[in-house]
Structure formats: structure tokens, C-alpha cells
Figure 1 (cartoon, rainbow, N blue to C red):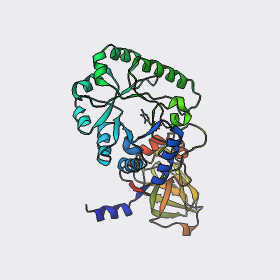
Figure 2: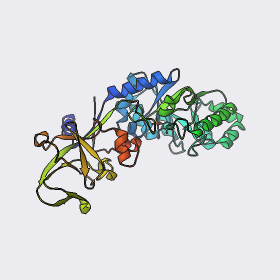
Figure 3: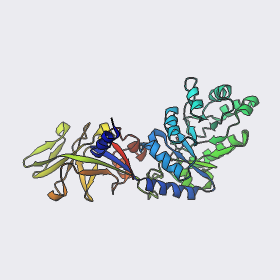
Figure 4: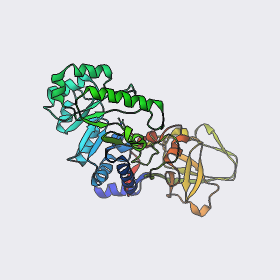
Length: 366
Ligand SMILES: *Cc1c(COP(=O)(O)O)cnc(C)c1O
């Protein structure tokens, strides 16, 4: 495909995700101010939460971001291609069969087990590594027993020379939650058993909670992308994404009728239904059938009937006929339809909504 073809494909995209990189950088600047003197690393796992890792990485690097976190080595490779000099940490899963990938791409493993530490020391010739201690998530990372196993091998620890001590909070998005204090206490105890190194505690919410939940390096994801870092309350971040889909058909319904699979929605005639080129295959949650919202010319209209693989139907009866034409875009996220509000309607969170937006949706950047 020539670049002209791909440009035309993008221009004619049935659905598109517009990423406001200016707003993303404003969110980054807010986090940098809040975190100081701690540094802010960008968390770009899952293709920068679905926004497009290369574009997001370049924008953040241009704003002075030097450190990044991704979930797996393949994501590290995509980031390395965009950022030849950045420090790229990989959160999960160093193994014999991907070790060469870490070394070739100069990725920094966040080691989760003693076995991973042994593997790294045996093969990495002193390359940098971080350690992840599990202080209460019970998910990944070294627990207190693992840390003692490591401490019992001074030669291993000396060869490893870990550069960063990571932990992750279970409830940073709920200020005052008792588990936060408990995790910080466990972190302090584990840290005291290990050689001095930089610390990394906070995610987006931890960054904004206060100095105790930051460490030397915070790991910010959702706040960069405009999601509310906290479970409740006003969102301090700027909106970054807008999801739009084209109207592929407009239908006037004069008689009793139903819309979509299962005939679940009964229209009250006379009604007007617009069909949009976006479905659950694009990551638009099926749970939003009969619950979702769209915005056209600044007015909210309801999603009616079931969401199907490639289409979603909205009731536009209340809109002036002149406000609508086949080929126009309707907004399904952003532009007054807040990420967290739509996620809640779908019974999920902003993180899942963003990371599921599919490959058919064209990304464009402002
Ligand atoms: C995803 C992730 C983050 C980023 O969390 P946000 O809430 O998106 O800021 C930070 N640290 C770890 C270990 C993660 O897995």
C-alpha cells in the first residue's frame, strides 16, 4: 500500500480515534509539577493504552520524559524503534526464550522472581535491571521470603546491582484506604534488607496522593491519557481522546418496529435511527447496547438496540434533520462524553475501554 493509499484509507476511516497530544502533554506537565522532585516515567503498555505507543512516546520524549514502562518485550521493541536512547523498563516475564530480545533491544527487566534475577546475572553481563517487590497485590514481584532468598546470595545481589525498587499499590485510587499504609510499611521493611537503589511506588493516583506514595520515579499511565486517576470525585486531567464513527445509514421508521439483534429495542414511531460504523469488534462494548450515548452537533442521543460486531444504532429522532447526513461522524467518547462516564455505563473502567479500541479504528493525532 502506498502512503497515498493509506492516507486515503485514514481519511475515509469508518471509525477514528483522535488523540490530542497537546492535552496529553498538558497532563504530563501537571504530573511532572505534582511529582517533583520525583521523576515521571510514562507507562505505555498495551500500545499506550490503545492510543498508539510510537506517537505517544515521541511526544513524551519531546517533553523531556526519559523513562518508560511497558508490559512485555514486544512492546519494548516497538518503543525502542521510536526512542533509540530512552530507558525502557519491561514489567513482566523475563524468560530463557526472550532473554536475547531484552539484550538486543537494551530493555531493562523488572525482575519478579529470584529465578529471573539468576537468569539475568548469568546472561546480561551487568546490564541494568529493576526489582519488583510485592507488598500486598499478591500478583507479581518478590515477597518477603523471596527477598530473604536474594539477600542470602550476596554474590548474586552484588552482580545484579539492581537500579530501581518497584512496588505497586492495590488501592491508590481510593485515598485513605488502609491498604496503602500497610503496603508502604512492607515496602520500607523490604527496602531496608536490600542495597540502596532508586525507588518507584506511585502510579497515576499515587503520584497525586502525596510524597509518601511516589518514591524517586513514578509510573504514570491513565492520567496521561485523560482518565480519572481516582475512583470517585472530579477528574483533574484533560480529555485526550475522541472516538467517532461514521453514519452509514439513516432510516425513518413510520410504523411499529424493533432495532437490531434480538429485537430488544422497540421504537416509538415516527422515529429516526442512525447506524454507525463501529461495533464490538472495534472495542465498543456490547454492554453499551441500550445504555451508551452518542453526541452529534453537541447533543446527546441514546444508543438503542444491541451493539453488533460492526454497527451500533442510535436514536436521532430528537435531532433536526439538517444536523445529520450519511458520512458524518458521530462521537461516542470524548467531546462531553467523559471516558469514565461511558466506561461506568458499560460496567467497566477507562483502562479497559481504551485498551480495547481495535485495529480497524484509525488513529490520528492533533
Ligand atoms: C499499569 C501500571 C502502572 C500505571 O498505572 P496507572 O494507574 O495507569 O497510572 C504503573 N505501575 C504498574 C506496575 C502497572 O502495571
